[in-house]
Amino acid sequence: MRVVGPEKTAKVGKIGRPIRRIAILAADSSVLKPVQRSLGIVSQQRSEGAFSTATYKGATVITGVTPAGLVSAQASAEAFFLRYGDSIDHLFIVAINSAFDLHLGIGEVVFPEAVVDCRDGIARYPVNPGERDSSGVIYSSDHRQCDDDYVAALNHYDVSGVDSVTGAVAAVCDRHGCAFTVVSAVSEKMDLLAEPRDLFQLAGLPSYRSALRFALRRPQRIAYLIAMTLGIKKAIARAATEVLASVESLLQQPRQHQHTGNVSTASSVRPQSAVLVEASKG
Image 1 (cartoon, one colour):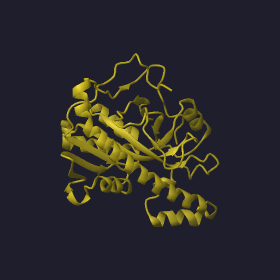
Image 2 (cartoon, one colour):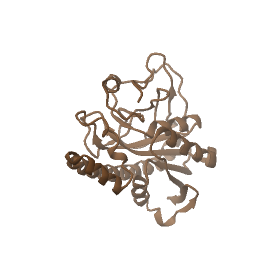
Image 3 (tube, one colour):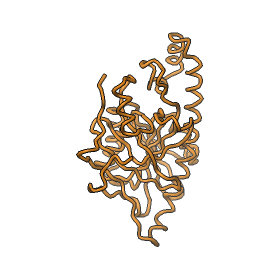
Image 4 (tube, one colour):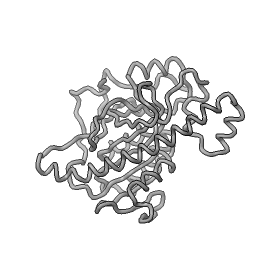
């Protein structure tokens, strides 16, 4: 499925030049910490406000958390670019998603072909420096109810997974002309039989106490909550592994491009006939 018409002009990303500064923005601290450990940078890092800086194989790596919610994620990403400006050669968005494509398994990592912020409906193309093919669409929305119109829209546009971060951060990267990669792991499958109030809230339970309150109010959902918790752990572990592999590939690419002359692109356009929009509000 092509969300973006190929006849539209694409914005060229920065990948293809020597990589000196990499950014990694994760959807939660529980997602970021395993990524830092996989890179072996935890003990080296120094704090710069909301962001931390370390070195990995000669490249500067800046890490930080983008809170859940499109407005919060956008504000955090804007603050990041305000601090670091044009110094970032490549940015990784690391997140977990609720799989709408029920063929995706728990813990499976998606390198999407396109990501969409429901607020503007624009599909933006990440750059995948790894060996795995990009496919599918990650749709970012704060929509909290699984109503018929919303499900119909996700079906119509062949959405792979839903979160509330990736599209907003991708839009900020696009405005700043920064190439980005999305590493999004499946933490749960969208259960269309679940109570609409529950959908999209399970992965965002902020604390043990909130999870306990959830279980006490809905004892019939305890098994679902346990499965969800295990799914989150599996998704985070897989995402950390894939980020490490992608960073390794990215750091090797400048030498490859010197021989081939190839330059990858990150695309962002608004086609007249293929704009994703929020199907319903609420």
